[in-house]
Image (tube, rainbow, N blue to C red; front, side, top):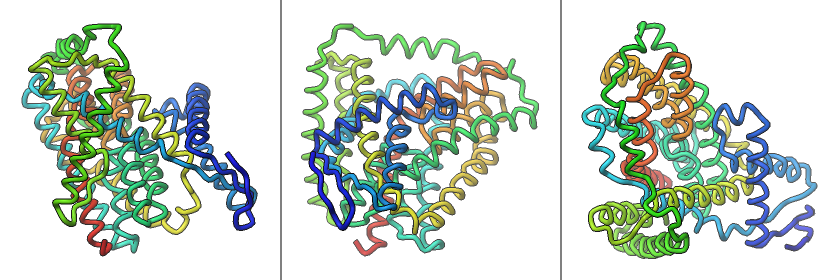
Length: 415
């Protein structure tokens, strides 16, 4: 840590350790805010987003008034991001898909079509609003379905490419989606239930045992599983995955892959091969805990290092694209998904979840579902299908779509 005057502004330079330390303090501060500010808890705002964004907002005021600027060394941000997505891969088991039957396949396809449409809207409207396609790309499925994790990782990649506001735009779009997804999901389902007089007592009972069955599959075999073993597994997969990404990017000209792609997909392969061979004893609870830690560190560093002043010139075009995304998902859910999934109470609850994770994240989807079922009654079908798709399998389609859209945006920029 050091102090200097840069361009007439007092500047605090934090090395990698100092940056990590501040990010962890802000993570704890964010947890405190969530426990004491009802809005943050109601809309499932993650603790690192709450703490990190509060700091970045104060930092913006300090910088624009010429009082103080923080210079961060974010060396630990990228490894935390890659480790998080590697854990996501290790948590993805394809056996879960077989337990949902036709309904889960239809819901999955509808979610995939949503991802494609969001990507097309973001690129198309970037031309209509005059914003650079590479920034418009960040207002599509990258952050709507992809959330802060993808918004931060691709935003950082875009920043490293020379587009200074990349990370800031990615985090801002993801936050917008998170809040709007939480605000709209419950009221949307409530509208469907009342308009079509949907009867909660006719909820599908064929899923009554599905949630318990999934829980049994994830019970830890060894409650004292060695944390070092799981860290080693993740790091080895990260290393090999990174090597694969470098080779693929070298062999295929014009295609840019984010650094976490290899780790995530290799993690999926390792997990599902291991389910058959039982070579490694993988404790799902340990993987989930590691995933939460890595994501929290990554998001906290990403949020606190935002330069919000870089959004000023991009604000109006971005808002046009983002509000269009909101209008589209509600229209899509009402006139496409609702008829195809069946005009039932279960479907209304599922669509509350779709709006939640289609604009925000899986916790938003679950919060939306809970808010509806607390009022009208349970929907085991929605509580089974929505989380298993949103939390795991959707990434298998989302990531390739994001990569393709990203490369289209880069090529449109002449990159």
